[in-house]
Image (cartoon, rainbow, N blue to C red; front, side, top):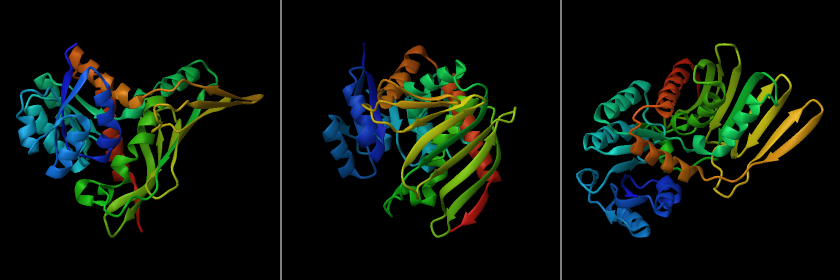
Length: 325
């Protein structure tokens, strides 16, 4: 199998910790070059992962020995650099959120499809097998008919220089963190959700959303209560409640590859815990991207879900009551 040759635009922390180690460990991938606004940082990444340090984003995109580009840049830069990557004839795997507005995501996906290129938003957790296992249990009727869904993804405050605190880069919890519980609700309730109401805590000095909560619903009135933020003790979970019981999953969104998920099912007469096998969602996400390229899959469920997710974030932002703190 000919390796998929990758270039990287931007030396973000997630690239260093998770994505580039996974790419380097996969024999079907080859990391060719890394570019950064900081040449020293590009050299550091290149040396660690056996790649070349490109002198600029433009020079990386001009290379003929790169098939696909990974874009872990701040959200505000995605629209420009994803478009330029597609214009250079490269497939693109971009960190979430793909853009700060749904219409921009729609435009980028349309451009990719017209050019016969694969564009994917890197929402890694949906590629972990634990969620399909939970979905199967619900389909088997272990909790009866679905009555409600709730999910929390919150993390501690970040260092003062973190890009999540920069409004000019579309920082804040809405784009970087709310994606997780929103996408989890879509995964288990379907993508025909609407926003009933929301509250956002806005840092008035920096102009970014620190945290929030939202209530969504399905067309049949099943509610989804979501919490997200970056001023909390770390929590990452969801709970599905049904007519006959409830099912809980902890460490739902960022489990390490060796983590053994534990699903807790509570019913009227008993409580049961089910251990699931460990899985590597990072490696799975990268393989799914390569598979889509091999199949020429420029559309599909992941593209539809990404657009629906972006529209829900737009709606949440529009309908929310904003409280400055």
